[in-house]
Length: 134
Image 1: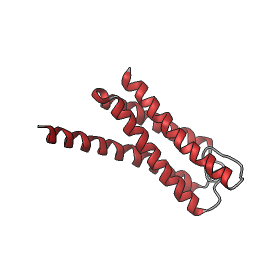
Image 2: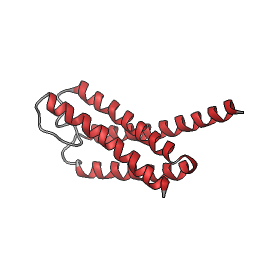
Image 3: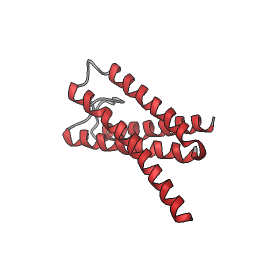
Image 4: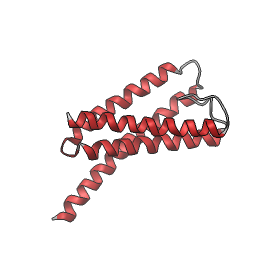
């Protein structure tokens, strides 16, 4: 149960960080707010910033989830992976007619890259801590 709730928290935290960054960009440029897509982004540099924010938010959310569910980190990883994949499917289906194809094909890579980078970082840190503790 701890693994499930930590995964849900990590997923929600990642969505919050990404959504909050979009709100800040929208308010800064006084544009209409969209939770996903590129409609509210003023230029290409902002699209790159959202890609970086998406990667970092996913990485941080997964790291939080795995750290909180420490003995059951494998279960938490499976749950948060499922949530992220379901969110990618939802986001793609919800914006398929509105968002450019290049964005639909590239944006999920940031979340998946953040997911697997966090898993790698967590395992590397766990291995390093185990070897330095002995």
